[in-house]
Image (cartoon, rainbow, N blue to C red; front, side, top):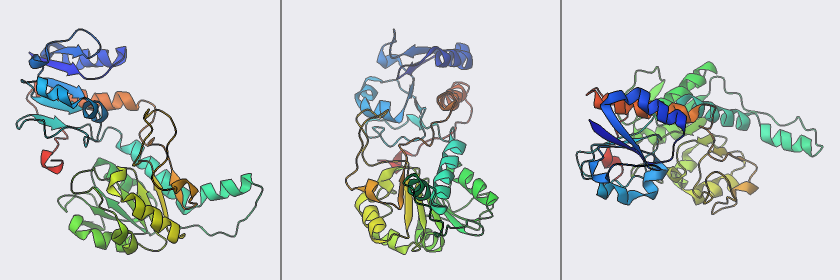
Length: 322
């Protein structure tokens, strides 16, 4: 029987879920209650933020076999401390539809000038002279064609948009108009009317979009980031938005967060809040009813698969982060 440690506080609903899904295959211990000696733990159920803030726990788990995250992102994991042979899995795909819908909400808000019109009318100005962008027949470039990217593409097809995408292999069974790899980034950027970033933050994608890439985009392009802020060079994006008012962007992810991620004052290194062509949301794309349970269900299902010797989902490539 394997020992599982839940690396964060949980409620009774999650404890019941763990008991039901893992049954007699594992003993489950919780960080806030009596637990086994860390050296006896075989499976760690954790999250990007939790393990990133408590990396030393890895060194105390000499018999660790599997690290399962309840989050899609794992860039804060201490991969340099995780021994070869330990499997690391994310919960990618759990909230893909919710995040894709949020991305499209930002796209539509920018294309139709929703926020600017609302602000003007609240101030008493009725101005219907500003033209909006029509999405019909336009090209959407999706950087990162995993579960979120494919959901974005499905929504885009509903607007009769052409789908250009990038993934690791340059292959997909989705009906794309173009599929390539990061080697085709320049082609995607120059052809796209809308660009959405849904890539993981890795050593390869950090700082991927900088001054050169922004200048390759269309003058009136729309750029939306629902992945990780570090994929875009902060200063380059600010200056490009400031100097090119027809270019629009939106972000749900940030370079700097409040100390308390649930709320607080937030400012970046540049005054994005002063730009009329930039929309901001406080990392809420995945905050939908039932989201937390859905993330746990994906993670716990993967642990169940591991205990039964079945094929695992969302295995992380450590070489992408080391």
